[in-house]
Length: 496
Image 1: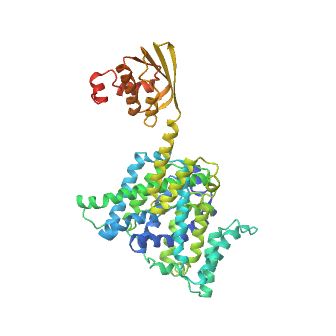
Image 2 (image 1 turned 180 degrees about the horizontal axis):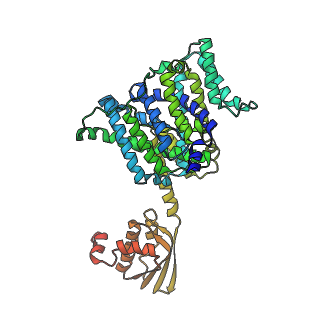
Image 3 (image 1 turned 30 degrees about the vertical axis):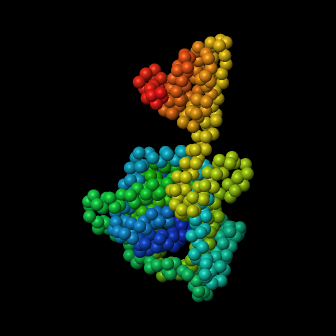
């Protein structure tokens, strides 16, 4: 147990501490911006980010991953806040947490097995584009000082690691934020700061039960939003966990992560915060800055609160331009540049899935919709590909009397028509043997195709015999086949 705690918490204290501070600084403008998107006070997003980060550090299933208030979740809250107010948002946040805990116990995270690598790549690329696009408002209609500060920030971020000795020991994004904040305070140049985005809270969060009536009407209002928030939150969290798994070459417990996200959202809702989930951008910052254990997530949450409550005068002086530089670094680091090179060597179907996921996600600004379209296309392409791995050959056993059809491959809804087309029902012959020893029947559509083949042969006066069914296929055929049931045969063939 002691070794486990050390590995999960204290195996990388220096790296986790420094990376946690960097992430905390990056979380502040995001939390404020997401609060503005959702239509609530900035402190709602800041309290949410603190609560979620601290709680998920203990309950989550992925060490080193950052969870807080996110833009994807904020977009789903706009209508609820506008029509019903903050209290209903807090109630929806609590229900979101409950639904996510239920999803964890139902092991719904295992559905991630059905998300192909091309969908994950498309999701990551789309998120990188969205992160970059989110910085554009800070770079339009501004003075030259903003561009100079942003370029200087990028220069520090990418060049500082090359300095001997200290270059690798201190995260370059942290150096960027500290150095350029000092430059701003000394020079007094005219650029936007964190303080211009909204008033920072000056008190610690307190327990707050949502002031809504506990009745069916309230449930009717918040349930649809809670379902959407739970689905999007888990989807983004599972995707983030997969990406961090790849970056660190370590596994994660995704079902535990589902439950952990639920507990964290309940905690946020009870402390006056909105629902959140894992953040790919901040998780990448954490990993790139040296964070590896749960300590980095805990420090990010605690430092965030301490800074906005007790050091608000200093934090409000941080120029937005340098945080833009950090987020541009995140978008560049998040984007899978290999996927561009791989377009030439990957199959067209894989490229279409990846590009469609990117296009839909960026076009709708809805991560869940992009992933849904990607998974759907991947499934259709896979089904089409497998349907062609089926072959039906035939040979005459006795001239004019007996023929054998050998079925090889997978028979299911996508290949059932090709299965039917392989038979010559008009051939004048006494008996047809359908050899299924090298075939597998997967669904009711496949069984119905087999029924139709046998029934059509019989109507032409030919005896049909099935041989060689494997045990799994025989179970499906025995359960759903009707070619030996006269009444069912008439119904299947439309009574003709």
